[in-house]
Image (cartoon, rainbow, N blue to C red; front, top):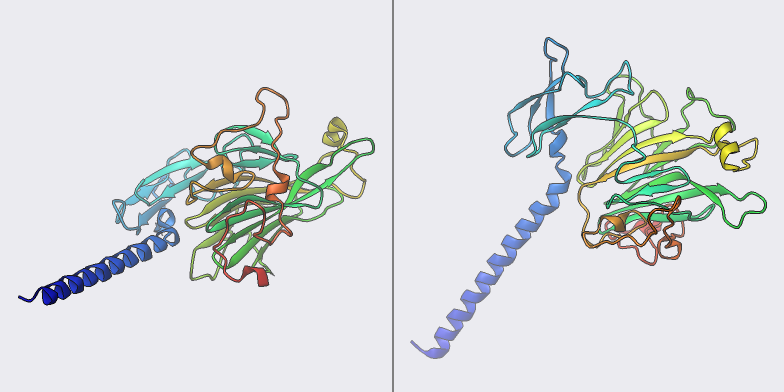
Length: 342
């Protein structure tokens, strides 16, 4: 056989092998891209409760749990306790874990991924720190390739102080081509029966029902998004499939708290703000943000331990032009094409 002809056959064979490899890689990447959108943990059909009143489900998710019936424990027989929403709820996981657990359906301000008070964080490394930000400022709490969460800070500066007292009044959760905003309304005096929490989906206000499943689901074909009431007012759980879960509660500064800390709040503003606990499910090793960077596997906290208020800086790195902007000096978000035009 002519050497040139043989060389041509080898070259063609290599081209076909390369094409097949690229196709296989593309298929694999396509499958990986679908993975975050498949809410395996909650992919189930609800069955009739057991004779003891414990809720049951039939798992539909792919994998080892497919086709299995899971029953809530006696300690938390309902997924969404209605008579007393402050009780623990039954969390059913139809993913490869295939388990049921009892969980509080409210933020744990001392737990991993929490953001509470003025404002105090507990990072992914378990280390507590304070980040003051600035009154009226917006800061990237987390910024990763396909998820960004910004916070809007409100605050006040009493006479004689050199810095603001600040609280988080709103959160913007950005992913794919969508933005979900949770915010506390401005209230003069706090009343538990008044719902001070607002929710907006892509700029439109949404109403979270108080009866039935007490939840709102997005009409997005890309990813399941659920906002569910965990109390009659001011408390919700947000699930963005494959990315993040948030337990959010609105609270205000009480009269006694105002006196103890000498906030010197005006009489016409109770400074309603958010208490939040995050659970991230699909972030990279290069994640950024005030809270996000604490989830890096090589992260070492720079804050001083053993002091009453260990401070974390970084305002210059994480400040964004607005609550809805994914831009900051250290931000990484790239999952929202065309977002800047919104």
